[in-house]
Image (cartoon, rainbow, N blue to C red; front, top):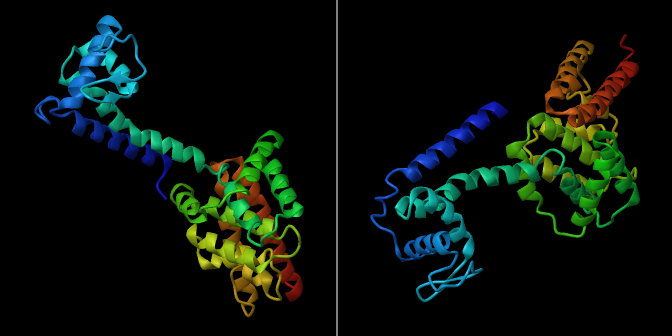
Length: 305
């Protein structure tokens, strides 16, 4: 996983290279202003000098041009560059260059906003809640309780409102999961999986359709099979469920069990995800407690001291 610092450096380099490539020979390639650029530039110049367009209309909302009409935003944005650089090729094309350069940055922050660890929870929660064709109060109560515990009451209320709206819509699970996989660290994705199984188990009856959608989401998130089965075993109890939690076989030796627990304890310790924020660390504590419970259950069965 690429660190946040490296991602920022890459982003800055891409924007810088994009700006340089667009700005080089701006007044030569293309060799002259085209018909539309000429119209945009002249109208910007006219607004600057007289406050009117080429037809004498004062600060119009739509600019009448050579046989067509142009939207006003680009023209008004061009006025400052004309005032600074004069009426020439550079001043007319500058807004286009800046827009092309910084649009990827805008898209980056929009994507980051909508696919943060906090904002995507209602989307995936809705997918699991709707999987069995019923929206149960027990599941909604579980989600609300989880949100309160992780984010606080005020933020939880906001997310429950988002969830309510999402439940009325078709959910693009695949698109959302691919975004999450790209922008979220593996440890955080594991916590998401734990959260989704918690929803399905809220009514103490995990529907096969819920297991199916969670498995589908898990694959899209890039969760490996052993980790998936480990989390699943914390909620779906079987004879050898505790062994699955520790990702070992029931015929493992006592020493292998101890070794597996130590490895899992390191892997899922809350301190390991402390840099991802308090909400992820709190969720990790719950998983760590279940891991410890599974180990204690095996010790009790085997009489391990």
